[in-house]
Image (tube, rainbow, N blue to C red):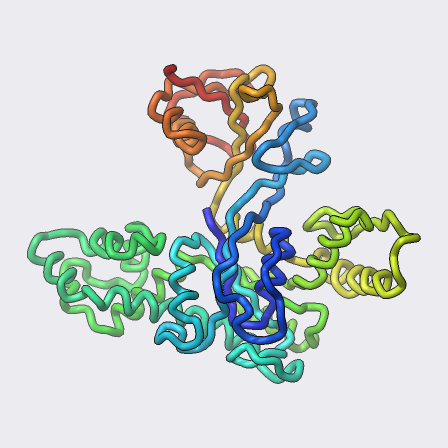
Length: 397
């Protein structure tokens, strides 16, 4: 699974990315700082089974902090998007190409209205941030429209002459974009297009289809960034985005807290509403003022910096659960003796055999049965997994 960090230039995308991944994407106050996509790993929080089993875990592919497991998910920070990107303006073609495999988007919006439509700095409150939400959707929609139209006459004719399902043919054309047949079918039903006569669809029909497909296949969380610098009248604009999950964020604050925590200055867990100063004597006056500002203007006001919440809301939209594969269901260990070593995110509805394939192809190919480590009951290949399951997979040698 992959989350795409998107938005126009200079709104805090790379700062968000760095804060969430502990990466080092270039940050500057001018458009197109990010040219090549930055890739990294973000984490979602889940209760670690170590508490339930009363064991001390030794995580391998994830992290555990006092019973909270931080489970990895891939993220990509792409070049900034500007209006008419689908026509190649700015770095539009590269932006859209980099987003092909993103399953969900976190759209970073400058809530303070201090960047214009091209991403250039302007006075706070002089640009309406809601414009950015509209134009991002428009650019992705027109991008999809352009791809569909390239081979449309051939696809429509073949569908009618050979009796092939139009949704399947479109899915084959768009498969490289992470778009599935069910996404297209759902969109077709939503706008009530006649699937038996696609040759009669107008450009407006195809554009509408593209719009619904992008909404379904690339669900979006809005990060209302720079919330600590945003006038209250602009923060109220969140209420107008009724069709979205909107999270107030301060990427700069999260990055500052992450850096301070990494240096051992404070004790801070991502997503928390507070932090504890550890090395008070080593903090400069300027640093202390910055920490006090974050505590009063961000954490106390909004409950967190919002970065972790955005990531977890995106995972909720994708309806993913976390499961823990082990080799020994009694000791909860892998071959190397590590306790509860791995945590995997899988779509809700996944089976024990799906998990086996997730761990290793050979494990899936030679699957015999699995054991639920909580109940020690044998479960079959088609057994549906639950969030937090600890599963031992038994396969043919």
